[in-house]
Amino acid sequence: MTRLLLVQADHLAVVLCRENLDVRSAATAAEALDEILAGGLDLVLLDPAVPDLPAPALCRALRARSTAGIIVVGAGGEDDIVAALEHGADDYVAEPYGISELVARIRAVLRRCPSPAGARRSDVITAGPVALDPAAHIATVTGQPLELTLKEFQLLETLVRNPGRALGRGLLIEAVWDGIQEDSNTLNVHIKRLRSKIEPDPAAPRHLLTVRGIGFKYQP
Image: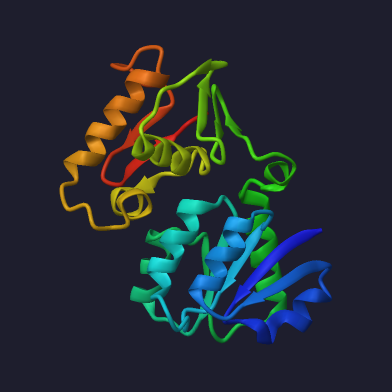
């Protein structure tokens, strides 16, 4: 059964439970992040009126930690919609909306987003040649162990958890350096180091790719 987290949107719980969805709720950004870190969620439905963190920042934090789909539901204007989408949301459903439309949007995002069901069965994250065990801080490429610093591991984990997704530079800096690293060249240096460790030919990368004007993505 699809597992869905409602963040400041528990008024939708009864309706969505009728759609054969396993629905749980979070009242704050902190609770939402705890649920994400616990694993196993397929979709997050987020009301932008979260009290402890702006919606774009919460989208970034959620996207950095999970491949679950993210839909923002609210009465935002064009700027709010653009900000949510640019910071990791998969869709924005603007009020007023019908329940049938909302359910259809949920189904569409679930079809596009990889299910984390496999992650529920194992703590090891595998994508292409890279396998990561975050709890044990073990990384391998094609079965060979990798020596990674803490920040290299966190950066690679963020990318590998979002295979094929273009992640913005700001999102990566926030996820790995808590948003306080001002020298964006540090990100370039870490990407270069990771390429030297996982790419057969670091000068012509096949997995850690630059997305011009956005940031980077991991291609399995």
